[in-house]
Image (cartoon, rainbow, N blue to C red):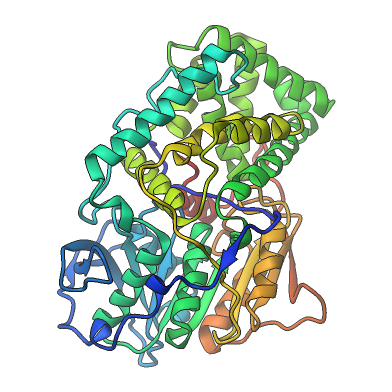
Length: 525
């Protein structure tokens, strides 16, 4: 979408599915597989904002069990270290699956304290199939073109139309990329990361991942614990629910976050004039949705597109002032133009989002088992919708291709790990995309980890977003490996940043750095 650089997927605390140890096919490759290769041919590719960026590409096997077979290409970026003290490469990932990490390297290098960033080569990469890596998947261009059917299947006709759309996407992926899809998964991407490590000529890597990137990092640490030097996991996926249960649990968390947004609007009634009672404000939002289900605004924004436009507010409260103005204009002024503009900014898909969604589905549908009986989806999602209507069915259709995916699924990976070095976890208590309990679970599974909590925070992706307390812990860890050690389930607590102010306020509504970060992390495609 216009400002979506990545796709995010969340997880929550759910009943654990059947987990297994790392599959045999995921065992560490041979010594030959990780032999030192020629230095990467880095070339200048700086931008006005990140002038020191360099770029390179790396060939890796499509099938890591056949290292001399078909090769694919990964796109890499780097901000090189400048200090005499060199602590090695710091690989960064923005989440997804499906997010491009090339620009994130520039952001991380600029957002960290200069003395810290100078000690690392900050390495970004587009995972297999993503962005500038080749081949880059795009299963069904225009899959999210407006106006889609209402996400809520209130009639059999609506349900069947949405089902056919999900089936069409899965079928298109199989027809276009049938030879590639069996190798688009987290384990393959982890092995790619180790190929990057080998190409960089180092024995160990440092790692910094957001959202899905936390799962990617945890799986890397499981397969290659001796090759991890330091690892930071921010906004932590619950690995015991990948991916079907995680998405159901996420629906409850997003509904709670949407209600928090409605309460924020009610608090600022003098600005928005939508009422002082959060429940009545929420009722007006659903009335707006019902109206758009009947008549799409500007021929572009129906009920499903409205959800697409407001879901980003569940990831980052910096969007609240903009979305509240759109809401107020539609309800109070009968003016749909701001809504159409907001949809084009936050909700409308472009080619990069089509690519991101293709990888999102390819990885998630392959990573673990999904129900193949649609009746199970129907029963589960109606049950969740009864309690959490905001995003449930929109999310269900977003993931529905996995019910019809043309490849088999892998066994889920248990990330339980006593061999990895101390890992630093960051988590906001009210995060909707990766709810808090998931971080507690990972803290338990990673025996030497430390958990830093942003108390009262609801944003997804919290370090380097303007909270000095969080960033102090991050910097200390990257400087010398220092981690906080508490006596309970949490090792350190930081207070959340204040909620934003309305745009009419003289006080800045968001942290400029936070807005930049979330522009790079993006949100669900």
